[in-house]
Length: 313
Image 1: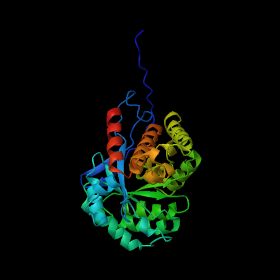
Image 2: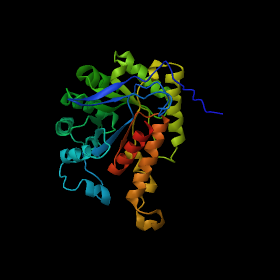
Image 3: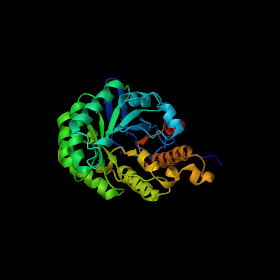
Image 4: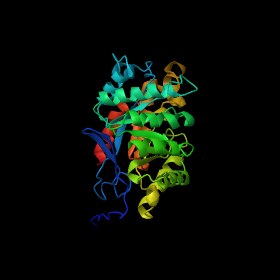
């Protein structure tokens, strides 16, 4: 008996959102099928792959990574090198030094750095704050002002600071912003509703529903994304029809499998190779679960995941 394909196509769709400017834009979302279901209907915008750099530099103990960034003496030089990596769709700058529990760099200095990076690269720019809720309330607004005209994507606003960030970044300067929640569909929807009630159009926001490294409670991540996409498509829930962006590099490179030195357990092999594999496993799982964009740290991981996406489109 011949196989008859029965496509599952929905009337609902994920809102498309575009960030970047000056001929260097990427668009997320826009599909009306489940994640990677290109066999049911064409996916207008394939999932995107970002590469993350930190304003505090890179892990020079990783030989392959050190070789990739060899000769880069500034963050701007690192950003240009990162933008040239094979398979990169956008660059993500983490303003790690802004953390008040660390270097406590000023918001003005961080905003100036973000602008210098945006001017230097030929890819769209996403920016991750210090991950300190109070500092980011001011920081991301100042970054949006500095990047006015570059249409950046800012990660992330939370329930504790969404009012300040939405007002200063989205409504004042037109930046795109991700609402970050802790791996829970109800929390994700609640934050989307709160931002919308401020008068922010859906086309200006994406979701960061949280993640974990593969094997570290990732089943909660998968089930949350599955429920979000299911509600968006089958129930036409407009408050969940936003693209999902998942920064996962920090998670993948912070578990014991990627931190343990080879000398401590030679059977595990090289630490760098383990980290790359952890990033690849986590990213592919996120894409299959519902991410419209993933953000990685190692260029080898970026190359592999980009090829993975291309093969499925």
